[in-house]
Length: 281
Image 1 (tube, one colour):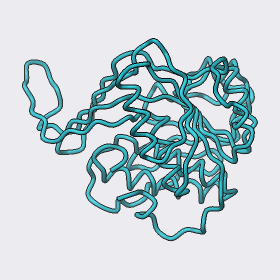
Image 2 (cartoon, helix red, strand yellow; image 1 turned 180 degrees about the vertical axis):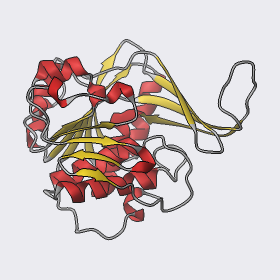
Image 3 (cartoon, helix red, strand yellow; image 1 turned 90 degrees about the vertical axis):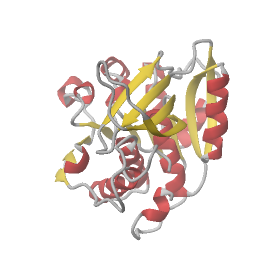
Image 4 (cartoon, one colour; image 1 turned 135 degrees about the vertical axis):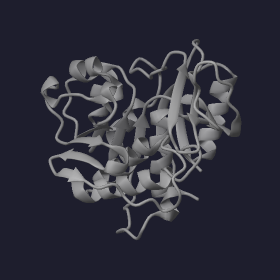
């Protein structure tokens, strides 16, 4: 079931040009009888492999909301995993622009047990696109909304040509500081210490800072605390929920919805994702 079909009625989204600049991880999802622990042998009850990671998940969710292709600028290893990622992401509705690298495509393992608890292990370097890559960067300035999960400082500056520019703290603090661009929103986890950025560390500070807290909702500045959306089905796992939230939020902002309404759309997208095994269903 796609996230778009599971959402409640909303004002129709206008025709939008959306894009994502970011990373991909080829992830093997394992539903297990128990999470890995020293000395124990676990059993996989269900398996799935998908090109995932924050950039890919956000872009696919945006494409589903708009029911049209979304541009995705990324970097992949010149290997079988990278080629498979391109094929699958195109099937999922993305228009890919790939900077090919000699390094291997990053992979990952995501374990989830019967209670929905999760553990993730990533393997290899996160590959990031750069403004030096020969990709159609001129398209960025024509975007109504753009989300960034991985970039170098010059590329992040070039992204500011979009009408709405948002990023995750996973872009990394030094990149955000060196780029010194005004973000319309900085969207990250309020539960992950690696994503807790103090707005005072950024100059200029983002216009909106949104920190997600899973089932507890989250905090928006401005706006205050917001609630999580009810799940439309049984909880399966949380992989991709935060990225799906970001996709809905940026899509709503690009459509010039209020921040509160954009957050509600994001929360709905995150709730639907929680009912899937893997980020796409």
